[in-house]
Amino acid sequence: MSKLEPLTEQELASFRIPGEVLRYLEIQREKLGLSRDQINVLDYGCGKGTSVAWLREHGYNAFGVDVERRYIDNGRGLLRARGLEADSILSMLDEQGRASHDKGFFHFIFSEAVFEHVPDLQQVMRELGRLTASGGAGLHRFPAHLRPVEEHLFMPLVHYLPKTRARLLWIALNLAAGVGPRWPELETLGLVDQARAYYKYSVEQTFYRSPRAILSTAQAEGFRGAFVAHQHPKIDRHPVARRWVRVPGLRGFASWLLTNFVIVELLLERPDGKASVRQVSS
Image (cartoon, rainbow, N blue to C red; front, side):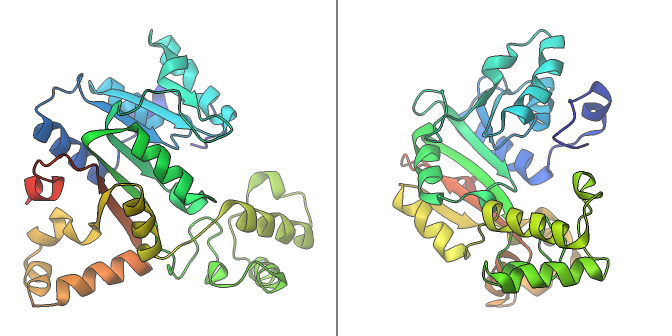
């Protein structure tokens, strides 16, 4: 369901939180020796809070923040119906991008398809650093910057082009060929106006960066970081893939390929001298 529609019990019943988010959350919880209701979890860029509601339903002390009030409002109704303090569980970031939560409050922070929408990544990393407890961690998943088909417009290579008329023309050509997202609110517009609307979105709402640049920004704000998409348990369980990635150098190549062309899974840790999440999970 869309973030523009209220969260319903039916939608929540069919929802499953991404497996890797839950896996790293559980690793972090076990590392810290906390129960589910003791570990403070933040969905950064939560939309209408579907993941937050799911985590709450399963016993986690979960919260969500977002920059769009209309998204937040669409999730609060269900939380209120369940007798929860919806206004404190789902809250807005202020104009400076700061959350209302105290410094170091969260043991685990995650985001899904958020970093590619962030114009000022340094500011976001600074706020994540403020919110993350010593010894805390987070997992941030977002589309790779060289992914052949752009994740939101579903157009090939559109994000490879500079934010100029060349990109606008390419968007128009894709629409003329029947390629595009077909947002309902734009259906009544002609092709040129649709192209302009999608172009405006791509210019103002998408900011793709290289993995190196993202990691460097995180490290500058005190995080220890690693790209972990290639460490998925399914790879280690698969008889062919398991042997393939054990060949010297190939696991590194697999990580580079996934992180640049498929999906970025960035694990961030706030060091405290204890064993890292990666060490605990190995």
